[in-house]
Amino acid sequence: MTVGADRGRPRVLIISHDLVGERMAGPGIRYWELSRVLSASCAVTLAAPAAGVSSAPDGVRLATYQPGVAASVEPLVAQADVVLAYGYLLYQFPFLADLGIPLALDLYIPGPTESLPLNAARPLDWQEAQQQADLALLGRIAAAGDFFLCASERQRDFWLGFLGAAGRLAPSIFARDPSLRSLIDVVPFGLPAEAPQRTGPLYKGVHPGIGPQDQLIVWGGGIWDWLDPLTLIRAFARIAPAWPAARCIFPGRQHPWREQVPAMPMVQRAQALVRELGLEERVFFGDWVPYARRADYLLEADIGVSLHPDSVETRFAFRTRILDYIWAGLPMIVSRGDVLAKVVAAHDLGRVVDYGDIDGVAAALSDLLGDAQARTRRREAFAAVAAGYTWSACARPLAAFCRRPQFAADKARRRPAPVHAEPWALAAELERTRRQVQELDALVQGYRHGRVMRLLDWFARLHRKGAGT
Image (cartoon, rainbow, N blue to C red; front, side, top):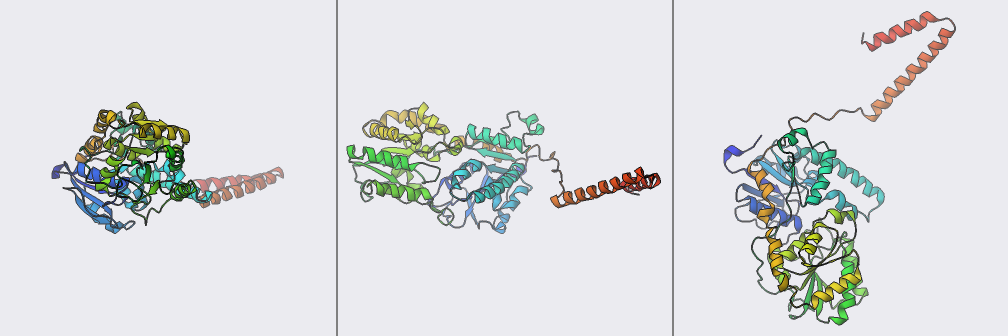
């Protein structure tokens, strides 16, 4: 059933679980940009945590909410025809699972694989308890969504398995759409259609220790525990004597929403390694770059780097900062293993290295630092790849759903889950059965002593009890 089609433009509520403001991490950027694209055909409200909201794209209504306070979100839902939210937001707002209007759930961050390295430093009992809570939530996510988003075809395969296990690969959906893209489709992280424009220097000639003519290596985004900045630092130490003008900076030392996302242990490990190797005057850690100025550091940089270890998180990751490098035409060094590394290799956008390969990263740094035409020679390749990742192109499946929001075909046909007895009830029934067996055994012993009538009378009483008489 299509919802809201008779009112003109459908009313779309996008709920960001991360800050939307001057400084944004990946989730905030994603929902800011998706709201902008959807506003071309829908009446869009972008709701974000009150802690960091500053402005919304033109044509988008901005609203705030208090994390975990349902009353701050319910009035916004009441004015919507369709809701888009990150799946794990159901932790904070369980009522989203039963709205009475179509619900699109974003799964572009694969929680089951990302949570493993995220929580790996905690006690094992804590990790297992959290995983059980996550599994229960994932069951609610699977049941609640009418449409699901993910970031790549590899992620889609992962989530199709999850939805299949949850019973959502339903005949009623297949009958309408054998591809099941009406249930889950790929909506990657995207890029602006406009080429980046530099407004002024951000690091070269501005940051202490970085001169205007220095060669700058940047680590885009955060220093998360599932990434590998240590290999870059060790490789830089090896090439530093041969490249005295080379500098390296990590702009994402601290997530913009530091109250909710404290600095991870990897930050301290990276800073300690820099001190250990005596690189304090060559390797720097900065603050999160304002979204409006991200082009400045990308255009003045000479190399972008994104490295990670060999893990299941890597397999299903979608490294959004690699897209920033593509947008800016910035030659890069990336670890193999994720889907965007394949794009880098296929289009010669830089160098793809093995996991933890210090020698390989050092060689790649020297090659790119010594190639004055590294950026110019790849300009057309970067432009061609970037054209396929514009936000308007990436958002097409979501835009189509929001223009004609509808419930998933299996929702009306879904049977209630069977009710299972509580463990205590099963134990009580087992005890009653055990007592009956003991009584029957005693009567059989009586039969052996000639008390047949007593046994027949017991059977008659048992039959009447079973028949409810």
